[in-house]
Length: 320
Image 1 (tube, rainbow, N blue to C red):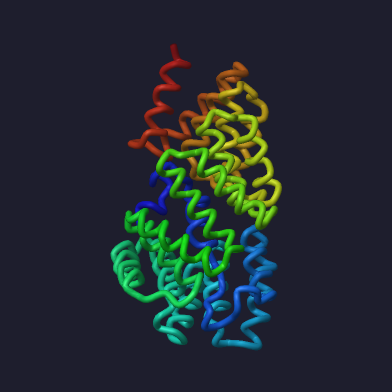
Image 2: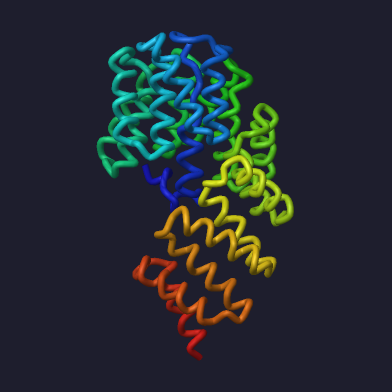
């Protein structure tokens, strides 16, 4: 499960988790891929409109309580809303209805990972890849499991098969773009993320991921534009605010950087990296008192980590 973590392969926590589990579609055994109600929930997830998504999926379940697709979607929504215990219940209900649902198994595995139950999560992931997929959603979910277990080739193959069954599966293109990014192929990643955006112009995570790919290419203007679109769709995207702030620091747009880091810290108070970078922005404005305070906070929050070390270096520099 390390590939879901902030330190894993250069991707953020929220962004990576959002990628992994926004890959929700419809199992063939339950609903056709063009089911308008299911698709509306998926679209709401992609635009981070979780309350609307939850309302719509509850409406579906009121009529079809054993709908595996709706149960899995509800689990994904609850996970995104940080109600992980409720998410586990939704995935477990789906598994009771259909024991061979890869989507439900992988969803449960990710929820367990959120609860730091890494052994249980990994075991369930390995069980999931042994199940025969019966839908585009199952193929995508099995691909996610392969990816999390470190097998990019099999993950890629499952994403491709999912797209054969459902060419409009925007989440599959997003996941393929993630693999391209991890292989340090930003051009291919940008192409794949662009396809996902064409399928859904409000796909917040696709904009955030494409922004990161542009940043790797050195195209900071395009990166800022994509990060800004992602934030417009989802103002609570902590890591995208942080990533845009980093670019602003590099461009010496200190006021804009400080605004982004401050917004990220408000959403995630324990965020040593954001404090370090905001401190750097303050030093560029000669606001050393504020910079010292932020460097000290970074050291407190990450005393033995890289952010803490940078905080110590910053304090030494300012004291000189």
